[in-house]
Length: 316
Image (cartoon, rainbow, N blue to C red):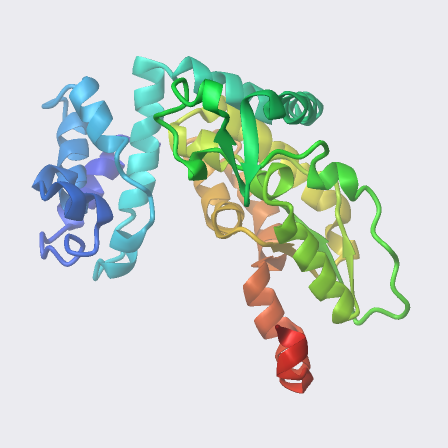
């Protein structure tokens, strides 16, 4: 990817400030440097070698949530999110990636090892934590060690992942459609009721589900700037998708972040890569079949009709 892209987008920005009010980071800090146009100016200065990519700039660019609200609001829909993602690759190359993130990303590249780690964590967790609703809370003896963490930072652990539990799905008689489920890591390892609920809905709609082999969508690595891990996972998923693409009507994803990564960001991963054109062509055949699960259920299934016919008591 050419450094000129930063200057080209920067020159296209008319500084209208429409992106500023809706930016969560700006609303927190009330600092122009942490607004979308502020990020853009800083990245342009760095591309022009007028501003060093030091730790201050690193921390500023790492505050962005990449929610894309600024892209939607911008009259020209300037790809500020893409520039920040590419800037984070430069940050990772210059400053490295934190050891705990690198450790986690290495697990993402090895599904079997990841499964073993979470299985062991599930076995050991009761020693230090107790289950409180959908979260884990430190036991009295360990509260001092975990006082920084809130309940929401400690999701539930399961002995087996969703993918391990569902190597096979019950076949339906004369299904009206056939779909593949792509499950995100949070739903795979922690909040498995997401996937279980989706399977239940599909069965009620007489839609055959399959749960094929798959990797992490690569969003954690991509948003951190870990290009190597991102490319590894993206290329593996493309191979998995192609292996069953003609057998299904759609690939549905219950998590919005994963769906956005697969549908939109996979194209951006290959910016600046030698084999970009090859992978873009492959993606153009795959992405039209990928849907956020809620969108697919609303637009391509009789779910609405089923709900209208279901008595309120049963809905509850």
